[in-house]
Length: 215
Image 1 (cartoon, helix red, strand yellow):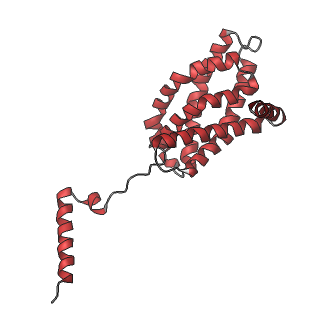
Image 2 (cartoon, helix red, strand yellow):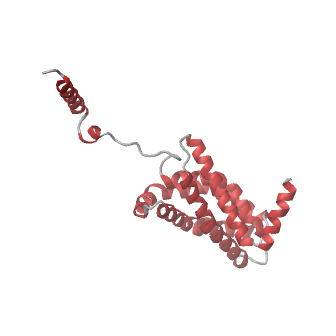
Image 3 (spheres, one colour):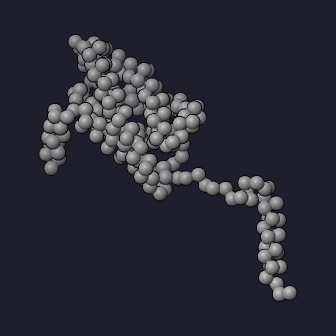
């Protein structure tokens, strides 16, 4: 069964390479956000998962595929798997593409949420942390990528690694555990100190009793 599916995937890469890679990224983002929501143990937010799938399909795969092709053609193209070439590609990816793509990613998330005005706040609070966490994973992952993975399979490889990374991205970009909505504040708690809340509740209770009392 697996061999047949793998053969179908390779055939799809030959017939529709970009579309296949876009669908691969969409699935990777769906899995990543699904795991993030399962870890949070809150109500499932299908619209949020759909937003991440759209980002994977329309942004991640086309950008990553174009970038990998550019690196392959311009960074030591005659010796693409030499350690000099591999380390140079990895450094270019982590120092140039990774920081830029994160800004694009956060912008896309907030735009699809209808909250583009929140982008500066998210970048201020989450951007540097996300970049630094990424440096714990992606340098080694991309050394393997550029050294051993065929060009056509790099999007698939990146998405396999990225399922776990997408959990981090989904968490960072939304700013709260998956599916968790901000807890509403009560009217009295929002406007009155706790002691005044108790007094107001008592007065309201006395008022209701006096209305029910026989005259």
